[in-house]
Amino acid sequence: MSGTLYLIPTPIGNLEDITLRAVRILREVDLIACEDTRHTRKLLSHFDIHTPTLSYHEHNERDRVNRLLSDLQSGKSVAIVSDAGMPGISDPGAVIVQAAVEAGCPVTALPGACAVPTALAASGLNTEQFLFAGFLPVKQGARRQALEGLRDLSATLVFYEAPHRLLAFLEDALLVLGNRPAVVARELSKQFEEYVRLPLKEQIAHFMHQEPRGEMVILIAGKSQDVQTEPLSPRLTLREDMERLIAGGISPNAAMKQLSQKYGVAKRELYRQWQEEKDQADEVTR
Ligand code: SAM
Image (cartoon, rainbow, N blue to C red; front, top):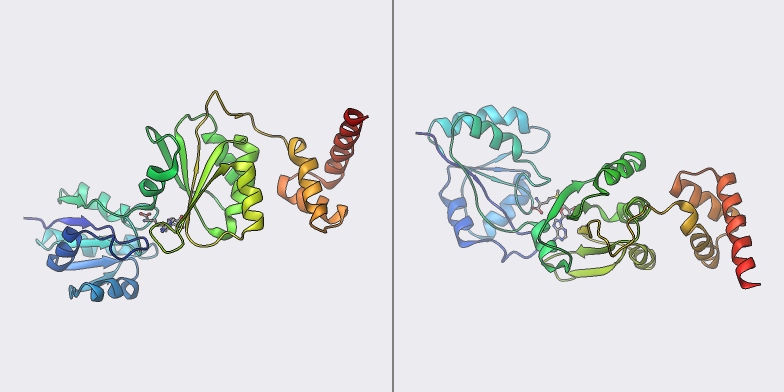
């Protein structure tokens, strides 16, 4: 009879966030396949677990499948763990699960730590329906296109993002989705856990003053009647953006250059729009 493939969630910050069952199964299985054996060994030694380990990461995931499948088929039980959270969720795991399912081996996932439901549950946004979009593409064009594909959904949108890309992500989200309510959930279950609950525009202002740090989940309200969901054209935020940058001590020319890169609009065109907006604002105050 085939052995069972177990997906075992591990803590995403706080070491206490591992279940008694997870610890027992990690002790009982024949093999633990780990995203990073050195990283997992620290967790295992903390819980006095001495099960053999094997590396299983995104670069050898496909090559390892045959070895793990033959272990399962010979009756051995195997646990998959990633560095943190639920294996297979933006982490290695899906390939061996598919192979085991196809081969008719029992597959079971233990409930436990995962950043998506944790952030969603405390976000204050709609939890009835959500769409987890994982990490969006790093390149601006592809990222905006991915956001456009999500623009009309009413479900809460949930993303993973690295701290150094947070501002670029928020700026694209503001442009494509409009100024929706959003939450940046940082460092969940760790000492400096924080939920920043602000509309996208204010999130940008917040993280321009406070450098984004640590691990984070971004949650954005789905399309609704009550909030503006029309995409903002660069024109709508241009004057404010320019004024903010100039007030921060940047020359108008350098500010134009930054915004030209940010919006993907030629500097000359941005300059024209800026002048036009300034003229309009002057007319209103006259
Ligand atoms: N498998 C993991 C899970 O179940 O959440 C996700 C792994 S993915 C490679 C890592 C990303 O998850 C981070 O970049 C961040 O977006 C999110 N993440 C993981 N731990 C987190 C934490 N403690 N607080 C906030 N976000 C976290």
